[in-house]
Length: 178
Image 1 (cartoon, rainbow, N blue to C red):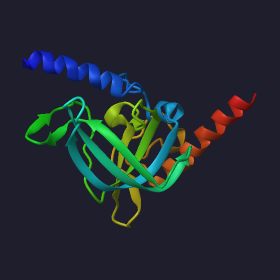
Image 2: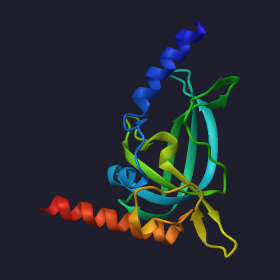
Image 3: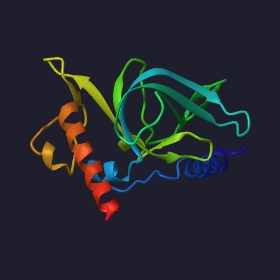
């Protein structure tokens, strides 16, 4: 198969595999509003494998739930992301996040795709990695936008981010109840 054709087929597969993915510039608050689930999780394993049906390589990320901030689900989360290297085949999917075993992150998840895997909102935008500060507090390592509680914080603490997410979820529930 010619490379341009492979790229086109993969692009179509990516579009089907991630129907909730968007490339627009939305704030973190917008993404939280759109998310079915916002949770904090620790990466347990990262493994790329070739799909026997399509021949494309996907990276499977298994995460252990630490806490749900919005929505809920099981204690284990498995993401299937396009791209990776397996069986001598490498597939590159621009914009897909990278995960490392042992790292903690906040996930902004949409509905599950046709194969039953949760979809990350806005690809890498749906992953907010956590780092510990000098005092051992967990902080988001990327800027957070659109949340009034976090204005002025260069790197929001997980505690203040949780408060903002719960406020947004409460306001959504109140609007839905009207």
